[in-house]
Length: 626
Image (cartoon, rainbow, N blue to C red; front, side):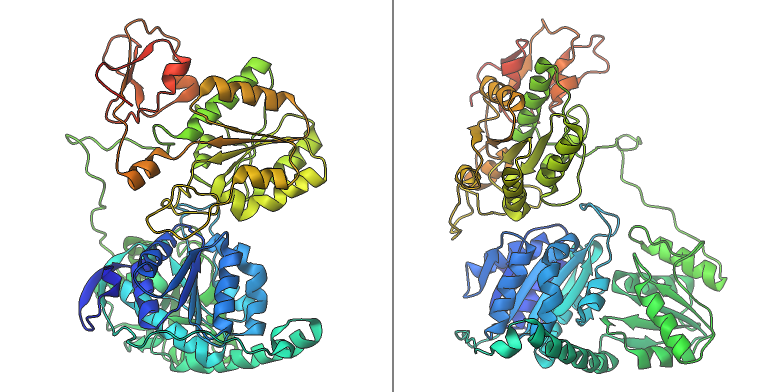
């Protein structure tokens, strides 16, 4: 039984912020949850999947975030409490539905978790999704700890039902992946009832005449939401000092640390905001009237700062209010406690004695070496990239490589260097069409299997319909590997009891009108090289499906690892081809060996046997077996 299902109210457990969100949803009686995996939100879906195998909760890994949002909206319209979770850029994909969902409203509580990623730990941009709440006219809560993540999730369902609107729960990486003590509340005891959809087309079908009235309803609900924000227990003023600090999210926790460390508790009035949209203007006005100057602490954009300044202007107050600016806070990257403490000290003119910065422990007193992200040993993507690289070289052709979102994006790095252009999920195919049309050069686009179903189908249909000249390589490793091995519509090797029905990628490609397509095993080097050369030389829309499972996923599901190991024989010269063209992390040169001979680290080697096929100086270790 999942720890998240422990029915022991009052007990304290150590949960990740993402796990706390799941617990809050369970305590609120969630009946349906949907997601497309994306860091830092992935664990929400992963934990809900486990719970769904042990309860009557319906959970799905949806094809993309728009689908997930719409599935959840349908359930909420039918009387089931529903949760939809995604990373920040996922909300871009779901935005079309989001912008109208407030017009339609919900019958049961619906919570939309948007996990922002300050510092871009695993993302292509650093957008601030608080603006989506403002744009869509939806209430928004922002937790500052795992405990608040649980409490706010539960409260968000209640608020959603009271207003008849979906509620955004906006988190950041530091909240999602912090582990903290969480006090358990009671779980619902009554079994869930079947949902019921009541037809009401003149309020639920957003044709223009209906939408005009619905927009007016949304504005009225917004005013009610503002009243809720004024009374919310998540918005508090503490302290009675003449200096003011306003903060939300994890930045509020950093402020609390800074006040303690700088000894400023008696000098600062602290406005901690958790229900941040609509902003509680009356509470903010009360706060501003009590202080002489204000520092606004928030990661990314000046969302609160601008709103607080507007309240000050409307109240006729002229006190200094600052947040972003030189010598203050940046709009870039995530903050940390030392940074916040330093800015607080400078702004209020108090001494700061920063402690010694913590650094990763080294070996024998030496700092740890840099470790750039890299495709794993035995990764099928590396094998396919190598085939493309050699095929182009043998044909005497220079290629352009639009790529996509996934672990294969690491093909960007030398020695593979197989990524030239990237915007977002699914952009590889469509940008390839534009580049090929504009330049007339050979364009080879890469997209993963999960991303192909997420956002690649329409691009491929467009390429066929408009007669573009591109080669698309679908890197099918059988899972959504980058975010933790979640299943997708094309997966065949699935977690235990997974109920999803697999869809054949080759069949989909053919159904979309592609006449030149082929499935290859990238670990069969001669086969994949010949197929790649043929596809590059052809014209029109061509698709190669590089099909071999992620070996880490196979090991995880089947619980076994290849025992095959390989070594470099003494005849190895100084060509360095394996390093300069293939670059498996298991291959290395000993700096103190006195020669440039290559070696293979048997602890890292995955036993894929690909290197044996292109280098005669690599041989199996006696006694090892695949």
